[in-house]
Image (cartoon, rainbow, N blue to C red):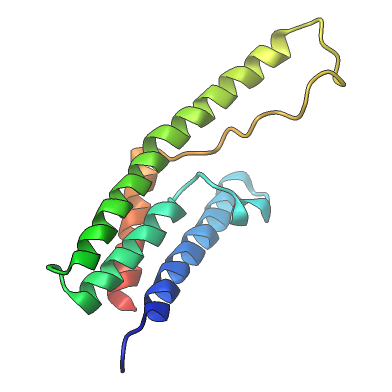
Length: 143
């Protein structure tokens, strides 16, 4: 069977889908509440960003080889995405948490003066990124 770009994309999408399903199930187990929003939201365990890029990178490695330029590009992009997921987006989530706390302490404002709370769950812990990467690796190897 000829492996095409569509197969690589399918592999990445399967890894993303599985990560999102795992998030919903873990959230259900931990909170005893079913939240469909978790299926399309960012943040949480495992990192769907990491599983997505690592599955793609693994599929490229299997089809093109570790010495191919395309594999090198995938590794670089995966590293940037995982760094962003773990650092930049997590920092933005921490900032949102602090701003939300500050807004609640400002007594002069009314409910109409302030918008909805900022989104807190934006990024990932290093463990969440690692678990997403391992899921992506497994999907990439199995696809």
